[in-house]
Length: 144
Length: 435
Image (cartoon, rainbow over all chains, first blue to last red; front, side, top):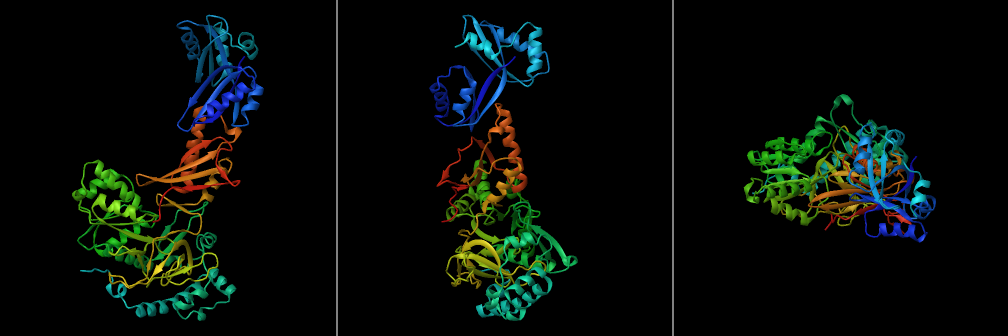
């Protein structure tokens, strides 16, 4: 299973990130994870939030949004945990487009978000190695 | 000592020039009327017969031709001779797909090259000079025109064509080029590159440059003259009328002498079409007096100019035109290439973009910068940077194949392109091209 990530197109100018984050927080939506990819002209804000539908609505006033199903995996918050997961995905012909990680929820746990070009294959190989991917509901149960 | 390529005609008394023009126009109108059905129809509709044209004073009775007519007549509709009599085709960078093609008989090539030769001699050229031509060769008239002119003068011609600056500089220095022919922005770039390589202006053998095909200022002229250690001359022309050399500057550098024995110039009010007196600013209109294959009568150039018949210290008696002071349409000249916003719009629509765009043209380090900002539609957005960059690259490629030059594409969020009074500003030209 995968989780819902929202991506927003932002101009690479002062104030655009603040505006987007404000819109989310003013709507009472919690940001569970966030990452910004930047180029000279524009940036892409990627967020995982408590209420994707509502966040999409409030962000759409100012910019364009796209929704992507990304894989989230819980791991131990210790050295080598991410390496182990990437090693499993390496073993099959799936490309990782981008990745970001965060800690939170129960002590000692960390999460990695993976954007791959084939969710099903990646999930299958992770499952084969005893690693389950999280759902939106799983995240909601451990994070505010 | 003053030099002329064809002294007799270049310095002919005004009445002599008028006599030649009057004789030529009567013949030319008959030639066009008899051989170009498209123009014959235009004349018939206006109720003008060839017999009504007894001299250049009657040219104002003739109908205008515009770029639209040329496009409509593409490719053979304005051809006035048999194809077997033609020896060359040249072409402009086209708008929205259709180019303008011009045909030349050997006689037409000769008169065009004579005009270029006059320009080279006016810039101090002779058979002792080495003329480096770095205008593009091919369909573009710049290279072939100056190349032919240089041959006529008997100069040693370096047919470099455009680009490859290192090689340009190597040949310029090794083969002692004395006259440089290119666009003014390329001349400025060569000057900068020479300086970067540690050359001083006096290290090269150049004495003059003949620069055209794009707008440039007096300030740019002085800077090029300084960086290359030369005198810089302006040259003007258009493929429709022949190519470069329709007019050229003499040592006075106060306007370009129009080769009036071949091209009759009028200035008109672009709104009403009415002919304006010398000294007034308006649209430049040319009538070809003696070309055979592609003889355009009253062709509207869309260039805004002023004509002056003040006596020139160089001894030439032909009328002088200012550099174009602007355009009566929305055409931009970017790095020497003609660009219309409508072309950009056509590419955007074809590639599936909204026509919400903005063109920003500037000149940095004497080279034109060309940026297009395009609004991205929601369904075109992807969370992957690489997808958006691929889109930009694809759009750049599509623009390049339409325009001949590649803009820098910036995809932006919807509704971010500035609108003034509800209407988007399509073109922001920050270059200071006119004094």
